Length: 113
Image 1: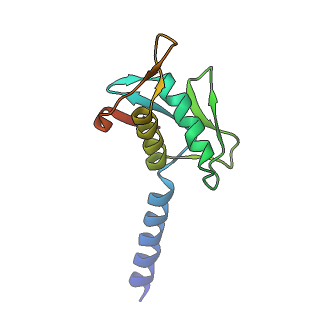
Image 2 (image 1 turned 180 degrees about the vertical axis):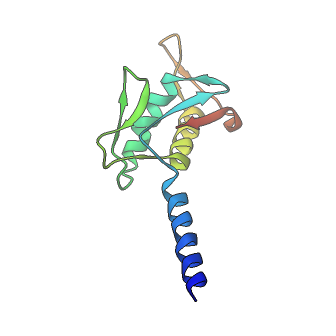
């Protein structure tokens, strides 16, 4: 009896930790192996516009990261990577400062948290 209760509590604790493990203070977008601030800024705007519960974020220029507004907010990893990929596919500011660039190969885009 004790063992089964202990086992149940242990399993629930592990599962609960797994759910929270995808929440981050800040994230960036990468194209291939390189950080891309132009995708990150647009993805941060997109992520914020989706009104995730506890998902109020902003682009922090000094760090170059999409960052939580306060300690009660967070960035969810899977949803963040989806925002990076959507931004890359739909278009983002080119490095030259003019025009729109695209990265249609979603396998090249990763969210790093």
